[in-house]
Image (cartoon, rainbow, N blue to C red; front, side, top):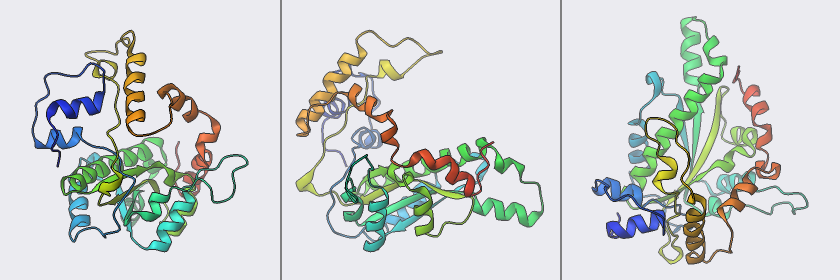
Length: 283
């Protein structure tokens, strides 16, 4: 649980940018604002009951029309985690085979694979003999993906409340078909992201990443123009974070530029084909 003052929490979240001065503070809000990604873990397994606590919290998230279109696979086997780390690797032209592997995936005691799972609803609808055309539309996929994300974030909040740390893994989509085969997913299901979870290593602590000021993301009544100077202010906070974290100098604009290049896809350019092969119509 957070032990920092409210000013410290806001300074970590926004850096030198303008900060909100009317936060309604309580223990849960403090925990949410203190969130940070964890990529260094102690070797201890998850505490007894931790997984069940996270899933109960996840199942308490909103789900569209109570359709419950998600599942989660907890992977603790070291060999499987190593294979997941390999499948999640970065792939760049000229890069040696096996380079770019996210080591923390193999090192964390547990990897959670969050599955957009339409298989139960397909089976249930088939048993009733009712038409199933809705499953073939993009909205059905989007609905399931949103529900999966809502559930996972509830699990994150629960995990952090009991002293665990997490990091999301969009890299599970790099080789989506191979990940599905590795864990035996049925048709009409796909891993939309993963999550490493464990006890943070206090010797390799991480800092809170700053976010843009609220006047950049909060719009009232209608979408408003971004304030003058917002990017320069955020870049200062971003540089402060990287410097404090011992990271090489890099601007947020540079990060955005890298994220829109084709190389960033790391195999995800094949995702539409994989989804359609697994039974998602995406019309």
